[in-house]
Length: 430
Ligand code: PLP
Image (cartoon, rainbow, N blue to C red; front, side):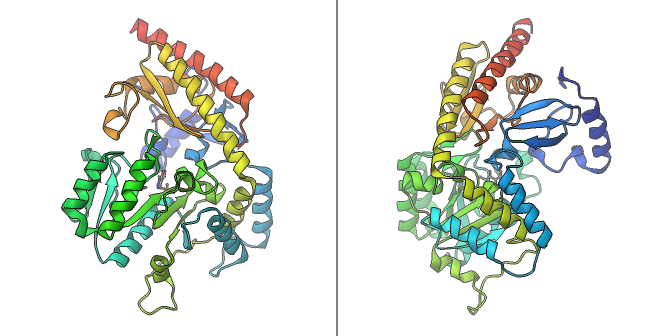
């Protein structure tokens, strides 16, 4: 069912046809697709974006949480301009890389040494490589539904045939999954496989559904990884935005390794991994038998400049402000959905929000299996929201940026009220 939008989409439609001639499905990211074609966005400032037909939206996605200050913040643009005039890429280290690494290490106590990559996916690859090399083991454990990028070793949904297609059995043999927040299941897994496990990989707050790992669960994960000699890896590519020292700073559990991405690149492609000195030292080229980690754009000058300007703006106060804004927004959106005929819920954690429809469970989702990834109602809600000038992920992920305030939140809630009414009208008629 294609469900055309009510807003003008002529130019996006024409561009979609042109894009499809060169790119399968008309884009380069699976997650950006929705039927009949995704709108092409052409510009953004602060929390507002515009598409090629001139439609304006409040951007609740901020490039999947990466643009923590919204689009084109003045100081980031200035830093990029200054850096571009001096050159964009050098096969050598530089001052901005030192400064960004220091800014991150000042915030995240567990990161003693770190390295930059071009994406979160690469950061995960290298963190797992480091864990495998350090422990001399090959297998990893991850959470059901945990998303760690496009590397074949960490498919998001091992229950989905499509998500496993093209991945050799030899990779899958090295992967074990456990449901979120089930300490017993994790204990059982370690009891069964403990001596084979190099790392337990977990997002402290899962992007998929914004499921929050409980403090007790993370503490148990720390104990079990220590007991069995595996490394605990926190994927904070998304959750870093939740606290000054990432989510780990809030829960007080220190992982062995951490992966970062998204916001630390200030809107440019980035990833990073780091943690215990004794693990990360294996990348030091002055050491015999060091691990290889190359990359033409690793630590790229433009990315470092944008990341540094972004972290400079991201004070503890600002993080607290957007977390409060997000909590208020999530609670109000949940109230609107619960009162509606749509059987929806909004869950969240600080500045992150996720909407759910047609859940497989009673009440709020507690694990991946409770969520319904492709709910027809979610699709309708997404289309109706676009018509009301609200832009977020087709799968229901939303976030606050520092470009937002109470007034914008009220504006969004007003628009969501109208979107919900529109879908209710269709549900009643249908
Ligand atoms: N880890 C998490 C938690 C993510 O959300 C993502 C991307 O959405 C990744 C890793 C992969 O990052 P990238 O898209 O930069 O490869």
